[in-house]
Length: 195
Image (cartoon, rainbow, N blue to C red; front, side, top):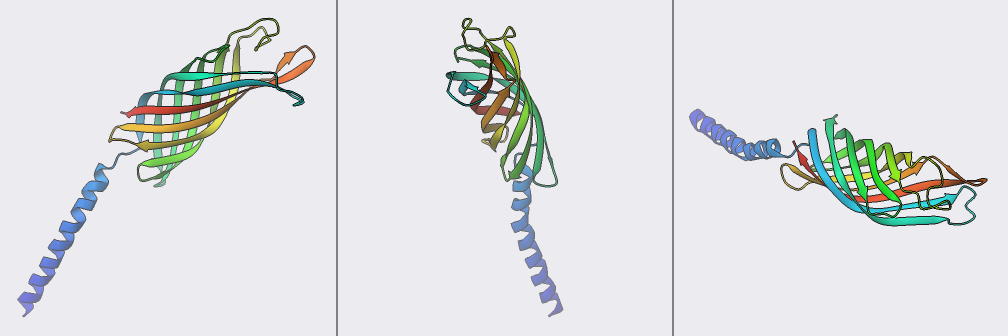
């Protein structure tokens, strides 16, 4: 009788171990956001100037953007993620050449997906149109403050896809006696390889 109870307990323990083992293995094989990555991106950008008094729309340009990026992420506290990224964008927008950026991100991770805000700095090289053109100052390079949102998901164990929308606010520029705001919005689709 006692031996039969022990055998039942042993059989139950074996069944439990067999059912839990695949879960442990599956969890161990889940992709992790920790570590570095490199990648490329494509998207669409819109750059426009608005008077500070918002009396009229001055001028705008839009077009395709694409570039390369590299960064590193760290997961902490179970589900929180912090990361840093640097990259270069090349633009098909009229009057806009390339942009260099660095940005940080804070995300919340659920399974293989992370979502959260981004914040950073961008330096963009603009092309002058003419004396009354899009950029009306001597400097063609402008620094801007970047903020936006990013949604990332593992596509395979090493490939990560992401959607990102960002806004860049550049230093105000002058046109005659009037100050104008220079802003840029970019939507990107990103593909990264997790190292």
